[in-house]
Image (tube, rainbow, N blue to C red):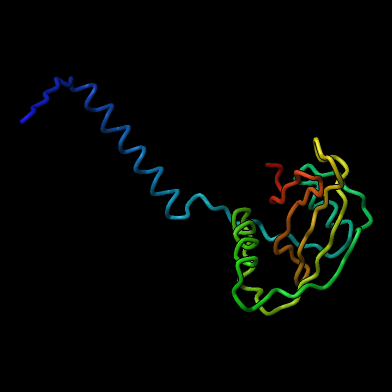
Length: 151
C-alpha cells in the first residue's frame, strides 16, 4: 500500500475550495443553458429596417436585396434543419415555433466582410414583420456559414 500525505495551510485550502466553487458555478451556468441569450425581437417592416438591423452587427450591405423569397420552415425533423436551427439557437433565435409555416428570406450582399475570396451574403428570415433568424454565408472556396456576428 502507498500512502501520500500533504500539508496544507488554511489559506491554500480556502483558495482551493473557492476555485472549485467557482468552477462548479461556471459549469452549472454553461450546462443549464444560462449562457444562452435570447435575441431581442427585432421588428422590420421595410428594406431600410433590414439594412439597419444588419448594421447593428457592423455589416455594410448593398441596400437592394439580391433575392427575396418565401421559404417554408419544414415540419418534419431532418439533420439539415437541426444543424441550421442549432446555429439560430446559438445566436438567440429558434425556428421550432415556426415549423410548418412560411417566412420570407431576404438576401443582401455584404460589402465589408474581411478577407473574403468571394461574395458574402447576409440572409435574414422574417415572419410577421419580425426577424426570426438568418445567417452570414461566405461563398468563397473556404467560406463559412455563421450567425450575424463575425466569428
